[in-house]
Amino acid sequence: MLNIFGGLGKGTVSDGSEIEEVMASAVLRKRGQGFHDFEVGEVIHHHWGRTITEADAIQFCHLTLAYNPLYFNREYAKAHGHPDIVVCPQLVFNMILGLTVEICSEGLGGPFLGVYDLKYLEPVYPGDTLTAVSTTEAKRESESSEGRGVVTWFNEGFNQHGRKVIEYRRSNLAIWKGQMGGEKVAKAAKAAKGDKGNG
Image (cartoon, rainbow, N blue to C red; front, side, top):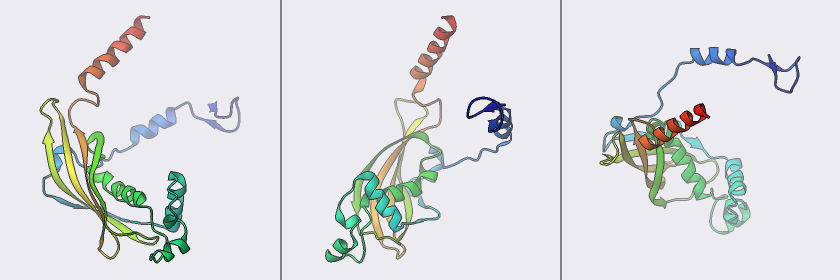
């Protein structure tokens, strides 16, 4: 047994065999959809939704230095025609994007490529519950790299009244054959391991 605080005695953890047992018995669950699972034109209603709290709104402003007083000064926001502080639009974007990740990103195996045509359509306030809908707009296989492709969705976010508050398009790279970085990276990694073994 190894002591995580140094030395022997109380506070010990295993040498890894217990972790290996847990990992061996773990059941892996496929998350998300792969490139070939998406159909152009399909509409995906993402589960759960998320209620934005006042704490979410205030903490996001301070963590990202979004110091527009509309986002954290209730009296200022009311003086400018709002019923409460306004949730920073970047937080609204992050919430809606986050709600779409499990289905639209986790199974693709490739990086997020970008957002296009982003529009904030209506203010969001603490206590609003947001839901997300994705429509698969396009998908194409790469002509230059086998086992690679790009999927594009039109994402929409709605509040609890069914009013659309945000919309945008986003794309992800999909990888279903080989590994990230491709053949050159794999060869370089293999060569590096061989050099270490010979030195």
